[in-house]
Image 1 (tube, rainbow, N blue to C red):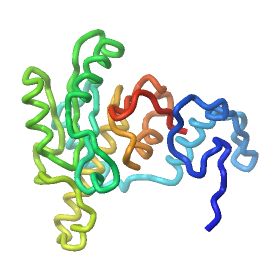
Image 2: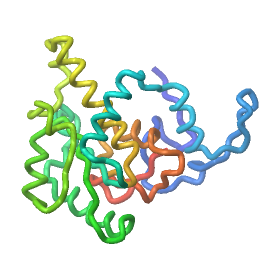
Image 3: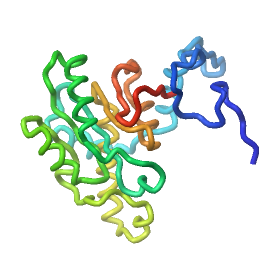
Length: 220
């Protein structure tokens, strides 16, 4: 298999350690009547063309988010554990999430920590986070789920249809919550982060997200 070197001088897409000059290149697609569109914005537009959540699951997700009170601006945390540890050294300490949330509160929420939505494949993080900051308001699908040991893809073959539906209802709800958050904190070692980055609203800028496992990386 031959590799194609991208315009970012890498063999695959993903992250850059600096804001590459080509990252916000303006592109024109005559066939779609799109002219001089920012590169990142164009990718967000195309994701919306390619990926649309079925109305049934969207309605379930939105009703669940309304029930936990996400009516105001909030921070979303994405904590990945499970079998991802086989590929990367994961961030198991939750203090970096707390530190990042405190900084986000200062820069984006007038110094007040808002509600924090937690998306995770290890629901034990809810207790850990609440122990770290008992006065903060953490909400999430994990309060109603049973994924205590982290998502392991090999286990899916043993799931019942009901278990599969429950997993994806939770995951889709978390995706919408992360994409809709005013500020989002995650990790760079999961494809979910790339997907959420481009799901986020069209005017979401680079100062509205943070990867806790690195000082600064740019999605392109």
